Image (tube, rainbow, N blue to C red; front, side, top):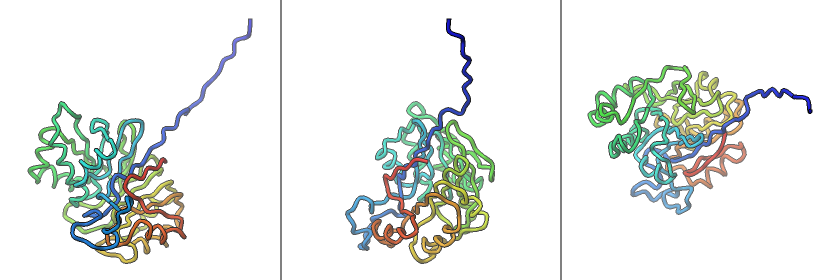
Amino acid sequence: MMPRVRITLRGPFIVISMQIITIGSGSDAGTPRIGCKCAGCRSRKPKDNRLRAALALKKKDEHFIIDIGPDFRQQVMRYGIDYNNIEASVMTHAHNDHCIGLWERSALTMKQVRALTVYSHPQILDYYFNQNSSFYYLKSSGFVVPKEREPNKKIKTKNFSFHTFEVPHTPSFLGPTLGLSFENKKFVYIVEASKITEAMKEEINGTHTLFMNGTFLKENLFSHISIKNSIPILNNLDVKKIYFIGLNHTEGTQEQVEKYLKPYGYKLAYDGMKIKV
């Protein structure tokens, strides 16, 4: 008889990667913009067709949605996202191009889909779900479950963990803009910001993948720091991969901006882009 051998297994054994799907990469009105004849809007190349900025993070079959703008219906249908597999979402700030798509939830009955948990700043949640009659209906009917985020405290859902931090953007009584950090700095998302503060540098430094505000290429405009002015700051931080997102239609084509970014090793996000972290 062979002697018995005791085998001790030590974990962790499986590391589940997170997929980042760019379901929208444009600014507030998308590209092409109605009635515009600029180079970006005239382009017929697929990467220059941009829905409003939003991401779907995916683990297993579950999704976490960052920002639900006016293109939300089109985005979930285009990328085959099952509403029942949306685990939660975040509203980064109160501008309509980042949250008005929540109204699409009203077209579905409670028998069709589960309630959607929405995290955001308490001022933003109060304005939309208590002072806005349409969004109040979503809350009162149980279609949406608003949840306040606690500053810098880790939030855990079934498959995702993240914390929020405040980002300077447009001064608003509706509350601040939120940056997001997922899975112990695997991924940081800053969709709109007027500058990069010291606190933001701490959040970004050591990150594997950063998605950074990229609305304007060379000039700071409308409380958005430009790509050009972000680059010297980001060059001094430890980040493995950097993608700019939210490009305005006036700032050129995907090819033109990628050419500008190439010497720095950075990239421009486009609709349908998928990466794993």
